[in-house]
Length: 284
Image (tube, rainbow, N blue to C red; front, side, top):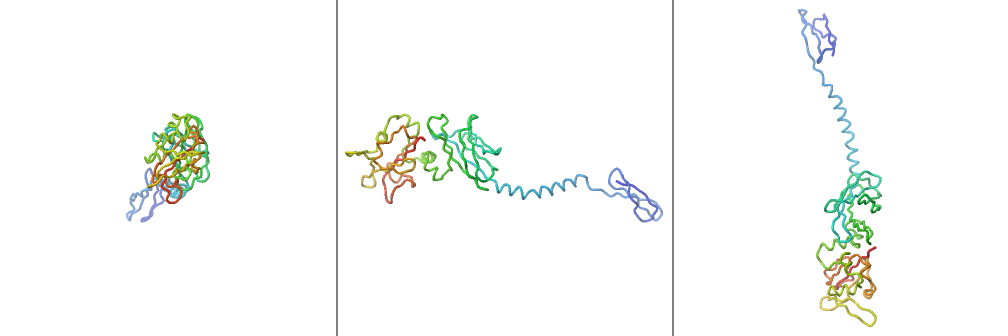
């Protein structure tokens, strides 16, 4: 730093530069000089101190950014058989955030801007589907994605998992299939029965069909008496006599519940109705 000298008997002199630390000469009563070392602060401390202040200042901004960001997660399955699909890219348009579904069909994206966003679904370098979604700050939106990779007849389905829309779509069909209640016909099963009417399909499944002069009705047992089963198409209830106008070739899935207590609650019709139901899902 600085090194210097003085004839003053008891005082420090003006310092002059030295190789290491501060060096000064202090005088004694007999006029001799006594060297004194004052250590300096390392040069690196000041930049580190300033850097710490910068990082501390940024911390609330980073925390706020994390609180404002949204997350997207879900699964990709085949609309043909409900099996998971790997290698499907899920991206949010206008960002650089994306993920690719794993062997279980699962994907997850974090750090997304909240608000209305467009997701892009890509497979083998092709944009398979685009759809607007609403993301909320600090929330995770879970999606159920169903794709027909062979592009045979089924349009992509992208719905919020466990929502009413999901329950009333093929997404709900495959979710209920996992529970083990009822009998299920997937797209592949129905393809092997091309040309069949719904009445033929129900007859194969063991449903009793009673026919009158004008139409036939599916019949089950509710308690100790016979009753007419309910028919649903894409979540909408039909008249039971519509059975003969429905063709298997138009359907992507059929779920059959012979007993009333097996029918999912959202498809139970009327108070105390213990009869079964047939749920059908169109191909498009």
